[in-house]
Structures are given as structure tokens and as C-alpha cells.
Length: 351
Ligand SMILES: *Cc1c(COP(=O)(O)O)cnc(C)c1O
Image 1 (cartoon, protein in one colour):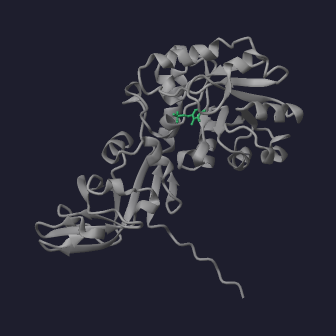
Image 2: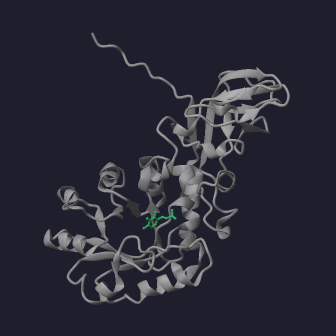
Image 3: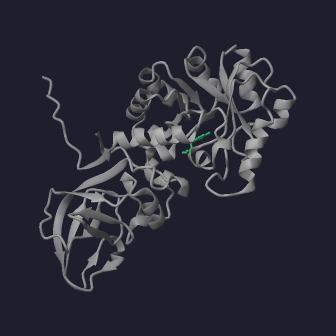
């Protein structure tokens, strides 16, 4: 006898603003001038949900998407019909069975990957050149020595190490890439991530690759006021309780009440990406009140002070203060960590 599946609702959710997402892409596209503006969708669209993000951006006109791995590519290919998809980590031997013949292109990063792709006659590819970050990429010297000869390259790219700072190294990295113009078969050059787009016209080249700013991150001050928040986090109150002066709250009693207080215990914890660095610094929002986090954040639970909200009850929803630049400042986490750490327990609700 089969048991009917009962839908169980989630006590925590991420509200996602599709208009803000598309608006952010359009702003980055406009700032990219005549360059095409792509979108980085790796890590499940920075935690928002890659398929939902991809569908919306493809509808808005985005034609170049980036993921890290082939598993991510496989999941996305069906929803970005007609758009290009590049796999930033290139191809391992284990990826070849899927990669050769796939519509997605590897971004080749090493001589070994170049050899592997060429031997398999893999077709069009992208190539990453390392220009000083010493993360991924072949060297400009190897390119000048003919490493890429015979490859059918769509985009030759490099990645900026410090685009969020005003440093001479940004221009030097860009110039190291543009020095290779005409020295390979590449149709396009690309250097700018979100922060790189903010550095100005001379960084757009032929294609830009924003990620964080699409999702509401403010990579540099130039984007403040134009980039809109995409994510709002909401969670249900599991219990309302009163503590007396002298009572402790949470693990290790790191908070001890100096007066009687009203608390709400929320369905949210570090397993949901709400890390312990929000202990004593984070807050929730309800009825226009900022409700501070009290004591230590637990795995699945967080306490807030609701003295100012007599009308909040068990089962009510509150919003978590998660404005990305502000939350980054409070927690010491990066805006990237704040998004990509959001876990699997949230319902992701798009509007
Ligand atoms: C993640 C990534 C991007 C996007 O960077 P943001 O800082 O999120 O805009 C662009 N290019 C490469 C190679 C990346 O790995």
C-alpha cells in the first residue's frame, strides 16, 4: 500500500526578488558598454538557485553563463537553451565523457587540460590566462610560445585579484591580457567580474562576468544605490519566552539577562548559514523594530529580544537583517560567504 506524500512546509524561507535580479543584470550590462554581459551561476547561483536565476537572466537577454564544474553545467544546460555556458574549472579526465560533445565549453586552465582537449578534438573552448593572481590559468609566456596554437578559442580571459581595491595591479592584469590580442584564435577577451565592471570602461573588453552584484552584493562604492538587494531571509518563531534578570541564554550562557526580557526562539541557525559570528551582532526585523540576536547562535536555533513587540507570537514570521554590505560588516563574513552559505532547508520563493 503506498502512503500519500504530504507536503511539509519549511519554517524558514528565502524571498527572492526577480525584478531586482534582472535590474542588477541590466545595470551591469549598461556599465559594460558595448561588451556582452554574462552571469556567473556557480555554487547554485551563489546559493539562490542556479536554474531559477538562469531562466530569468536568459529571458532578460543574457547569453553567456559561467559555472565551476560539469555537474553544475549538466544541471543548467536544459534551462539555457541557445545561450553559451562556460565551465571555469576546465576539464579533468573524468569530465571528458560528458564534456566532449556537450554544448558547454571548458575554460582550459593548464597545459594538461589544453593537451587533453586538443587530443580529443573537443571543439570550441575558452582559456584562462594567469596574470598574477596565481590561482588558475596558463601563463602568458606559454601562450606566446604557442601553447594554444590550433585551438578554437571563443574567449580568452583572466581574473582580477583585487578589483575591489584601487591598485595599479588591476590595470597591469588587464594589460597583460590585452597584450595577447591577436596572438591566439580567441574571438573575445574578458577580464571583469562585478568589481571589475565598476573599475570603468577600459575593463569591459568584449565580455564581462559578474556574479556577486547580480545577487545584490555591492562590490565597490560605484555600485551602491544602483545594485538592489535580491534576497530576504525570513523565519518562523518556534517559541516565545520570558527570562528573568540573572537568567542565561543559549550555549555556555554567553548572555546573562540584567533585567526581565521577552525572547523569541527562531527556526534558524548556523546549519542554515547563519553563522555564530552573528551572535550578539545580528538582528531580526518585525513591525519596524530591530530585534537583536541574544546569546550564541546554535545549529538550528537563534534567540532574539522581542521586548518591543508584544504582538509577536509562536508561528509568526520575522525577517532577518541580511542587507549584504551591512551583514558583512557585522559578521566579518564576505558578501559571497553570506550568500553561498545559505543551506538547503530554506524554501526559495521567487516573486
Ligand atoms: C566567480 C567568478 C566571477 C564572478 O565574480 P564576482 O566577483 O562574483 O562578480 C568571474 N570570473 C571568474 C573566473 C570567477 O571565478
